[in-house]
Image (cartoon, rainbow, N blue to C red):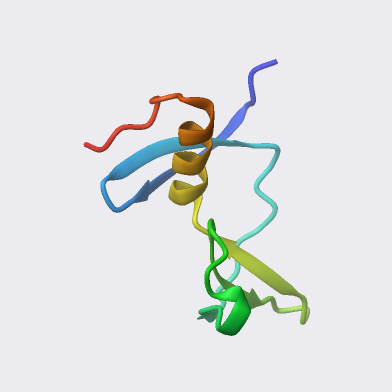
Length: 80
């Protein structure tokens, strides 16, 4: 089954489409960097407090795709 919704993301020199189940909403949030023992988590660039008070991870999708491609030996994503 092919996903019906994709989010097109450009991060630095990389552009790709990320399949998603749905777009839930859009929020204006302040993104805070991770510090201490959390600051070197690969694929996570920070966190944000959502309007309802929940804390959400801010992912770095380009890093996640690159790590996945390196692990699988795949080269689908290339720099422009």
